[in-house]
Length: 506
Image 1 (tube, rainbow, N blue to C red):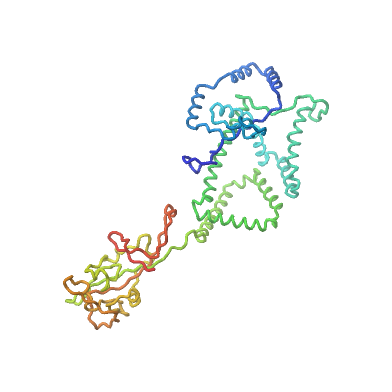
Image 2: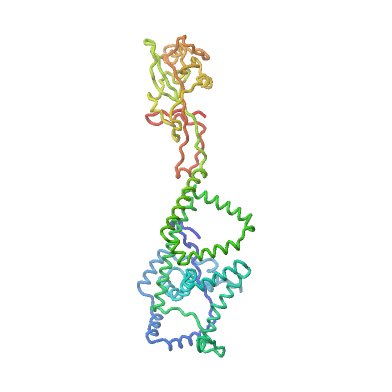
């Protein structure tokens, strides 16, 4: 099936060539057909003959022709295929079975649709009769017939080699034998006439239009269309959600289960007692349709128990799928850092909380060497997680390894506390080189770092490092189609307005 761009992809319809209408040659010649028509006219009543003549002579109505023209504009006639266009020009003696000489592919026509529907409805009664008899058979309307069917079914299950006999027996007993009895009717109900035929051969006749049988077929056709629509909608409601991956966890679990069953069946199907299984399933299925068993199965107590067990099973399956079916890898976890910066006041010998900033603001940092100021936020609560990440830990943790992070960054001109609150102080004179004016000569801080003992004089700034865990936020379904590369580090420049995002550590 070809799908047009303007059509909805979820609708299943034949968008290829039209369904062919076969031309089946009849063994009845034109003369025989005319003779048959004349004999039928003699047997028909005056009303039927007048109605048939009017139907044959009547041209399509104006409404039909207008509607057909409108539909031709909406659905333009398809071009003939290359084979069809060249069929008349073929010089080879071989007949092209794809030609319109043997197969018609007519486009939509109101008149043709109306005529075909009437002809179809006149002849579809045999299908409804067969369907009704199957319903009577399986619902125990006639118990001897149902038991006879179960007997035959049991023989087929125990000896599958008898299966080819079934269609032959059906033709013999349900087609040929009734035809013979109709051709040779018995003079009474207990005998059969085997002499010359006393009646014409029986043929299945279409139901006459506007007859009771015609409207019965319309009724059954209407109900069959409603049954199909309801089955289609029920399948979309109860089956499709489990197979179309709208719930990927459930569909994945079903796919995995079916895949495992297919593997097991491929390996061990020859070990299964299929005859016993078919026999048991068939008997139980037909026995469950018995009216007495149906009244028991459809009782409120039975329905309540079924709902109770079904809800319990569904809850167990849901919990199993939630815990065992993992579609995405665990969220990526990283550690981010923020530096608490405090400023020293020599007059009062106190330290004033200054900022929380993403950099340690060390003496040789570009900001201090350029005479700039530290950037950040004054409150811990304003520190935000990086874009695309969220906090995993509830609290910030003080980094007790102050010496390690100083050495990793190769920071010089500082004094490090290895105990207590783990502050990292500027050495005396470092702040003059970082915050002095351009006219004043900058002093280079002492190289290396010193371990603080609490007695030496300290510089203008001190800082300590806080850390916290973050995890990557799951992508939305629309964003899953985009190819997003994993970040080795979080960009510290992606800052939220009014908040400071910490810098991630790889």
